[in-house]
Image: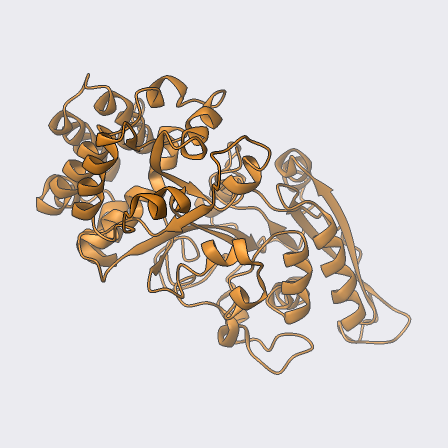
Length: 440
């Protein structure tokens, strides 16, 4: 399961490189062609996209910057490699590691204010090109808590590989039955009645954790990005008010239409069984991310099966959001080569780096990247080209409160709503209580 450790995301993971530092006393800069050299320390996560792409990017960066040596170390457990060195005062210059991982190293750096301000990276000219980073960065990927964790307008983490989320389904199933792809929650529930008549469940989910992206998208659709940010900040009225009640009712009634085996298999051991329901035409829709196709590539499927993908249906047809998981790259405040580190990060958005990453299946958030994707990838990544709005970010960092976990309450309790052991209103009350405690 790749979600979050990605992009798992994720949540879906990426690649890790560690570059040890050795300074130059007589350097004439990163572009110097003299015999002196600089060594850049980079730490990146090896995940679902492998290590080959990172090695290619490093090679291209070195070629474009004579005199620079990038020492690359790749590991699937980046934290265990980097943390001991950092505690000893040996910091990498660049770290590619997203939030949302079990060891929470990135969150720790955020809380300790140990990251360098990268706001100026967006104004930098991409090495080897004439365009600035801000010219090529896709709209919607900056200016959020996922890149500006303190909400002060300063960027401390730059966005990397992204994976749109939404509802996956068998396009052939809908076509053969003459069912239109629903754009609103009302249309979705109406389709559920048609599916039920044919003995097919409307919905399933791999685990309750996969309902986070659906939740975020729906919250933004209900009240816009300001309301979404209020909810992510544990605002009482956001969860207890009219919009909050609308959210709980929409999701609560939807999960009650889940396949009967969903709850029993909604765990880390059996989640693929729920995903298989889509391939077997036993359920119509499930929330997921782009990694699911490779995860299920060898699974049996109904005759004529073809992956379909859509943004989460909204309250209004013309206002849908597609939440995206993406990974972050950042510079420790105690890094020795900050200027060169920023130049390396700017290079991540170059045409060469984008192509290198694409060969490994990792997609950078740069404009027109969908033109370089294969047909199946375009089905997923073109969701923003087709009108859906980009949504990123999640809950603000809050001081720990013993016994309180917002995501466990908000998403974990959905199992109880699905099987009817907890009412929708009880679920809402529990979430409001958790939000109040964390906010205080």
